[in-house]
Image (cartoon, rainbow, N blue to C red; front, side, top):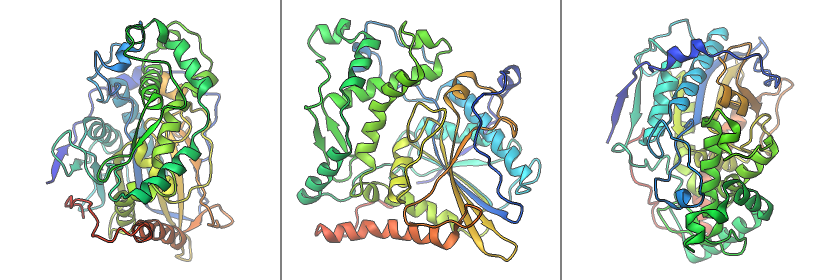
Length: 439
């Protein structure tokens, strides 16, 4: 099933002109590539921007604190008004950057299959693509492609295990356990910030102390990997609190009256970041859950005539793809989320040199915490943050670019790993990924 959502220029664009802050003290990485190279194609895998928490009134998150959560501008799980504004800014920045590269003309109106926007069929991902598209191609008449009924998860963007048996589950659980560090200090900080022991849920006995020894893994075929226990509960609260920090202009109010440092916000975020890393980035799990999305990205990188692709999903999508491609460790300056900040873009860029040789650059482009909270206009002089990624066992040339055939080989290797794992664990039946009609 295919649905298209015609782009409507976001009504919040008018807000951008009224927002102004001084230049950020944190300098973004230089984005220029030497003039000897010509940009040929851009493929983006994006995480949705700021959304309301997934939980609703009366949920465990609601019962975990005596304080009132932020009055969100959207329903649970949906993109907030701030998220839409920030995503429009990001789209505008990419438009100005690609115009400066002479990759697209001013007021570009793509023809044929030059551009593709494809999102998971959830409100927050469709809306993110809409807002980015409004900033990027305000007169481009683009449409947002989906392949499921509205608000249903698309198998391409669902980080689900499509094969599991007892031996695989046992080994996967062992790897997951090995990735997890002691979160006792982070649990204690979170409990203090939300006044956990004074909450209705805790005092009624419905919620208990956060523990580090009560985790139970849930690994089932055609379902996302999950857990039961304190980490899952603390992750939901950590997620809601971090989103509240992005959304609420008053930082002290966002922390329920506490004056937290950026390091403390990182510690709170570390709970949910550790959860995502544990479930989606281990060597046995990442190639399983990322398989259809890896195929989709590789297909876009080789699509004849394609110039620009925007795929919109979730943090688990970026995390599992990066792990499958064996990305080297990196740090993200200015972010409290350690790996895939809200609204982050995994950007694949194809270049050709004067001799016709093809290269690639892969970056994470994201708005710093200060940019998310202050919403300054993003320009070529005040860009979002950018970190160029490198990959294990993959050399770069003197200009820091990856030979395109090396990146292609890594995609092929990562995609083949899925079938290799099936064979290693004696799972020989045909794959169970549903046919979404995506081509």
